[in-house]
Image 1 (cartoon, one colour):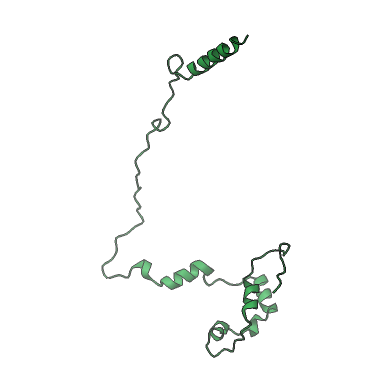
Image 2 (cartoon, one colour):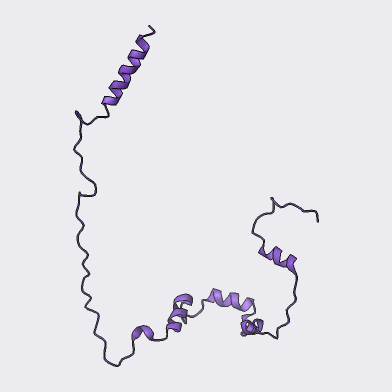
Length: 136
């Protein structure tokens, strides 16, 4: 009994290892990268293009800043009734239109609130469950 266990284990290893060989059972499977050839890239002709006129302005140079503003803010479109209502309730008819200029003006009075206010404003968002008090 003692000798039969190592012999059976050895035979089991030989049988399992023989299954890894490529002698008897070899599937002929296709190479997945060689199955289909890719067609070459062809750019179809665009018949709407016309050659540029000598001395004419380039169309992409016309008011690039205006094109950028139109892309960002949608151009000069009329406000909807709901949007007009919100703006009127917020006091849009009496609002100071130059507020951005007056905020950036060096003559604007600014109150320094100190590092504590800066730390509170810069604190990450959260519900405060992980907040801890520190003894100073």
